[in-house]
Image 1 (tube, each protein chain N blue to C red):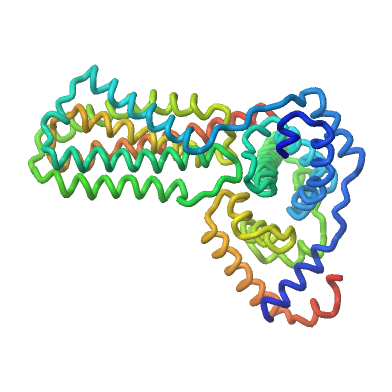
Image 2 (image 1 turned 180 degrees about the vertical axis):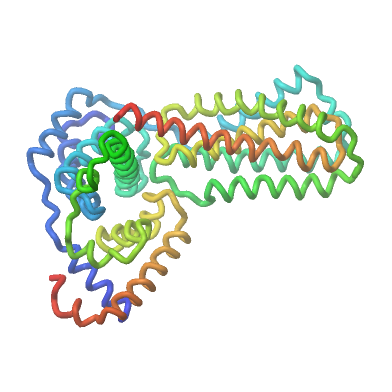
Length: 175
Length: 235
């Protein structure tokens, strides 16, 4: 990252190839189509490039990337809502025009009962393997708040999966 | 259902391949290549925070120098030694918090709402303990003047703060605006304590301290509007 800040194109390329799969997965986990995820990935890198001076050498880099990706994703989500509302105002087109295509992955199915913020925190913590501190940094919140979200998410998952019968999950539908 | 089992499910689910189209990566590299120049990282947090505190102190002092140091002249030594250190401490806290808001993935120890609440309540406690004149002369007329004066000085403090942190990037502009407004509001209260000789408890507790939440609300609104406009441009 420091070499990228110094203008080293090789370092920039290596960083793009190393970080992009995780960011892409981050976008895909949010019920997005592959095309949307590709677009957001490009937009995220443009933003990262624009604000690369805000990364402070010595600090963990992963939360910094995720913080910017999260910002782009939130903007995209709000923009898509506004576009959908405008389209509805214009010609009252049916819902399928405005509804983004959803990816029906196992992860999404598993996390479906959770709120958006709980899903995000759990995905970063358990799927991407980030620490509590890193997740707190990436989501601009405190470690306590992250712990609370994870606790509530687990409680909800235990209730939901327990109610539905864990056999379905154990039977290997996930893998 | 145990937590370990949920962890296993999550790990299995996460094993989905995270392949990205090589063409997309190539496009990303091509798009950043032309503008790839060395950049200067932001200065350390303490330097930026010190700059913010000095800017706010300068605005308060300049305002009081223009309007008169009547308030501080009327204060006792005890009042001076409690009011201004409290304001200074809260300004430092708000400045550090504002710097963290403008650097992505900074460690957030105090949320913007908690900072606003703590600043207001801490000053309420200090003022309530020191100012015990419970008369209320010209409550509204004198109060509105102080509120407006405080807010008018919060504006340059906010602008100077933005100038100092213009190279930063707020991932949540509304939260950053709220913290910036809190800091600017503290500068406004600083000016009022230096200038206003009205030490009636109701006046100080309501109208002086009101500068902080009003300024914070305006800051949050401005931040939200800036993000809204940025999105509108994209549409």
